[in-house]
Length: 50
Image (cartoon, rainbow, N blue to C red; front, side, top):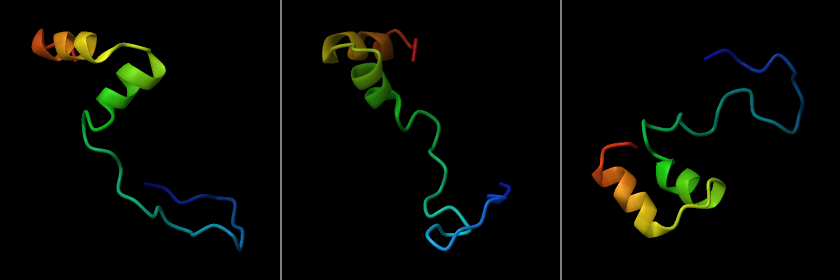
C-alpha cells in the first residue's frame, strides 16, 4: 500500500489498522447502507448471493 503523499503532524504516516478481510463488513453494508432487514440478509447469505 502506498503512503499518503500529504504529510501533517496530526496524522500517522502509516495505516493504523489492517485492511478488511473479504466479507468483513457485508452485514453492516446490507443493513445500514442498503436498508435490508435481518431476514433478508440471512436469505441472501443462505442463497449464496453474498
